[in-house]
Image 1 (tube, rainbow, N blue to C red):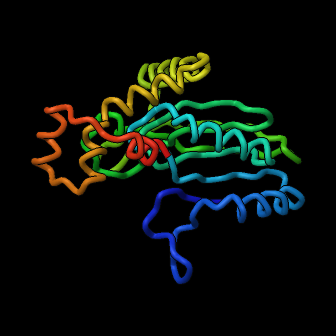
Image 2: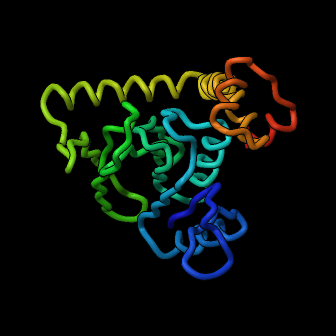
Image 3: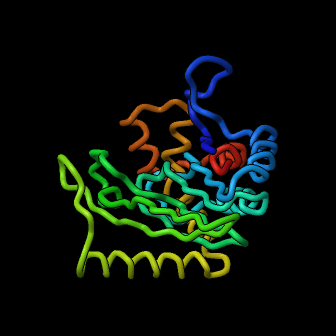
Length: 212
């Protein structure tokens, strides 16, 4: 299965992105669970360059695992995110980039998934890590791979700390408050920079819109 959130390409007809709609998705999960040994959900969602999920994203992914999904791979962040085991499933909160020219330092690596299915809900996986080297990619090995694995282990430990997801999300919201306030009010780039510098506050209504 594959779904996305907050996409302008979602519409009622023609070639389109498959928007996240729980009223449609949950029956699909229930039906497929009776037919397949392994159920994978590709989720184009989350915030760009965030290695930890938002509280809502984590809650949603955990809920979908509880409904019968075996593995969820989130792919919108353009950076490698934390990995979480929940119930009988596993959640990847960011797969990174494969071939995508972005200047952000967090967007230069990624991983492929090799999944082995042994039977009903019996599976294991391997992450094949790589780094972009235009015009291609190079698999990580040796010391570079060890360092990559260590960084991922530390990120998983951070995710497991009680309250860390909420703290990280609140810090992100505070940092981006002026930018999002300006975007909601239609400000141009120069005005957005001025409003960020001035620290102009934004309303409770705007906060609710941004957080969701």
